[in-house]
Image (tube, rainbow, N blue to C red):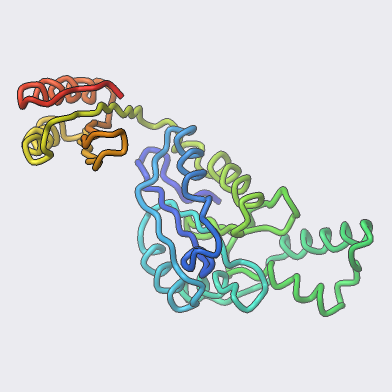
Length: 269
């Protein structure tokens, strides 16, 4: 059941779990994809965390997260091998038991039957390997399933937190399903635009007062300054504003005028 309050702007965050990401053995792909999926729906990411497979680390992170009203998506660690600790850590953070979800049991049983039809195993759920597969349906008490179109083995949802596997081929459709099923009322709640341009021959310190003035004068607009040491051949600043369209347009005009007044060389971006 969706716990979201439709008329309140919700913060959306991402947690990526896995030692293989932190060690560099695998490169994260979830962050950029999640930003893309949110942007398509007029939603925005406010934060992302990358943490290890250690159960206490995950539990501490989730305990802080469950205490917020944020919408959180978590990728990784929900399998049934010893390094998969997310299900256990979520239950620990919530102070609830782990239980085999009946719908998850049915779906995993279906998956085993599918494998047997393909000659890739047995549908006998009393076998040790299939009993181990059922562990992937053991979730914190009170959780709901998140369907997995790739192989039927579901993720789970509890307290506005959606838990998915680390595999993009599974996680990304689960992200989309959750956004469109549970959080459709949060989509396109506000219009936001972003404008930027490059500035040459201007130290960042000279334009900083104008950036501060923008956020004082237009409270819903955020000023952005990204200095570069010369990736285009010359040192420059990528300056911009983002926020509600009308206010952002006013702030952009002000910023361009201030850059020109300070002696900077403008290049549209």
